[in-house]
Image (cartoon, rainbow, N blue to C red):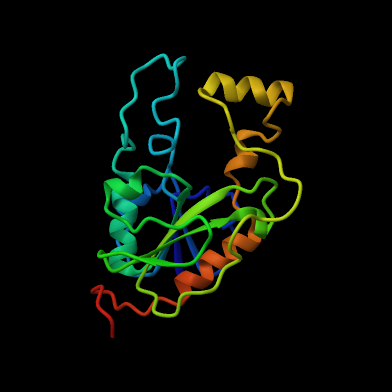
Length: 210
């Protein structure tokens, strides 16, 4: 059994017999174990536009996600598994995670885990969607499809600076041709990669190698 944390229970993980989905209703911050995890904590307050841009109506604070990322890291490091966040996430520096290299490959950190950068365009996403992964408790790390995904992809938010800009670009088709739901979606093939990583965890429930 794998626990999918911070996911839509009606999304790409739903209906899988060996996946326990934890979404907003169950509050994934409270996951008690003992299964390895695939974690997709919210990224809005950790990304390049964490402050909402100049048109933001209320002040935003970097990392203000109600403890979701902290809980996700705790679950990954206690039960083993993989955490996914957008490329450039400020959470990596905040929590001292190893900085991935853009050209691919796994980077080890003093925290005992590994990080990498991979584009979801290799795995069926309609955009390149460069993504950072953090893995803990896995001794045999997989070789992923490294580097820039080939093909004519739409651009994800390049040159945009606020939520209003993103909304306007979606409506007009300029620079941005995917909806918020389409941008956030995890392709089934990439989901399967993350689940395979979680299934290869060698940690015991106490977080120690057997």
